[in-house]
Length: 362
Ligand code: GDP
Image (cartoon, rainbow, N blue to C red; front, top):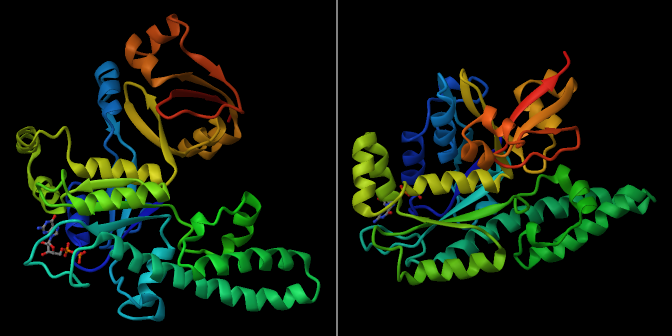
């Protein structure tokens, strides 16, 4: 499954955030296909639509979607040259599919900032530079290797080297590969390099409890992120870790007191899921209401394949009810009566929230 790697400079609140995530998370033991490691948290994706479906269907069981977060320690300036836990850090981040960049946006004289002062933009630059330097290393090695093949007339290698040289210039300016404007073909041929700065990225602003409004650090972060087109989730890690320790009724009470609809972690988890390019469709029967995870753009047979590979191979058609119709009309039978159950074929691109029933040959 796909993973979000949590990165950031030391002392920005990564562990606090990760612990809050795993506290509120679910037992890895329930998911035998997931590797159990202390730095991996498997978390249910909070989705109010599940509750709405359950109200209508009254299922025996509910199975939400899950997503994985990995706590990646060890990023310091110089990581790309092996400083600190540099090499391990880079290897860990290479195995993730998206990067969640935690930046400190709270002032607290008691908590040392590695660079001496709170400056999210400078912190982001440190992280960006290390990742870009690591990629530059990979790109330059590949240029040497492929350059020889290119000189001997290998057309494929010539194409690759042209892309690599373009990336070299780009990375030397400290810019991430994801912002290089590569076309699909170029993206495909550089895939084997497993570059770091090509992964989608977002920011988590760790703010003080009262730091959501009138916070100049947060305002500057929003400005930068907007230029990059990167999502920002602002939360207070310390508060999230307190919330995560409460039982359900205490939690409700606390959130109400704070005037919050839900924990900030929920926003983070959904943003991570989205960043990974994932979306959800539902199956809704009396036995189980279940959220299934697919990639944005997946077709009906691909979506069926997530349930079972036989479903994809033997796909006949999908009976689809849009989530809004399912809920507004009060379930499958009534949606069908109202003509809102559609028969969709192999080409159908599944929409987020679709309630689906698959017909297939075995
Ligand atoms: P990491 O090195 O990035 O994993 O940071 P930690 O999670 O270990 O946090 C570093 C220090 O900052 C700890 O003393 C935390 O208690 C503190 N801390 C984390 N989040 C917050 C926060 O939201 N507000 C305040 N004031 N302190 C925090």
